[in-house]
Amino acid sequence: MKRPPRLYFNLRSPFSWMGLKRLEERFPQAPEVIEYYPYWDPDDKTRAALEERDSGFHYTQMSKAKHLYILQDTKRLSTRFGYKMAWPVDIDPWWEVPHLAWLKARHLGRERDFYTAVTEARWERGENICDPQVLHRIAEAAGFDGDEMVAAVDDAELRAEGVDALAAAYDDDVFGIPYFKVGRHRFWGLDRVDAFRDELIPALRKAGVPVTEPTEPTEEQVPAALLDRVGAYDSDSAGGCG
Image (cartoon, rainbow, N blue to C red; front, top):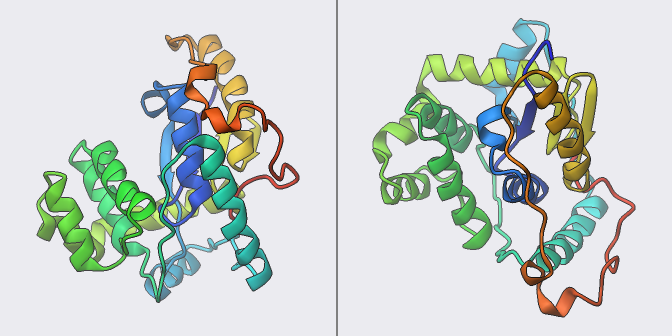
């Protein structure tokens, strides 16, 4: 592989949340061998910085009809996977706040801890992680300096790093998330997680990267109420936001 495998995620999308959760449950080594890139709806300042470097943003906002479908689809999928979920309400969200804080956590070597804390807050408790006061409390509870994490949005170096991440997404033709890339192979959506993993592991082994055997879900890991309902959900969507 000329470049390491890449994974684009965000803290907004339920499909990103479930996709990463599924991948890391089945292949716990994923964070060690894949480069994770945050991807979010940029504010005016970030968008202007992208334009200055002749970059852009492929994602387009979804229609009301698609949004209503996603609400229903997400409920189906989270129930099927046995994930606890509380749908958050986003009112004028400022996505730089949590995503640049994630970059700050990465500088501290604790991006996994931060990711876990904010996704649990957003998807299990329905909290507004774009609210600086809420993020401050979440960060403090996870053992971070809350002031430091909230201040990430005003850090020029982290801003520039965020622009680099979004520019990389643009160059990789990312139009929605979760989005995975290994070599020339690209995968978009929650229901492409296994296909990505099946391409990823042989590529890593070929490159000489020690790989632990992935785990497969057993019947005991599947909610009992769903064992006789395999396939009883929509399968004609890539299961992604985009």
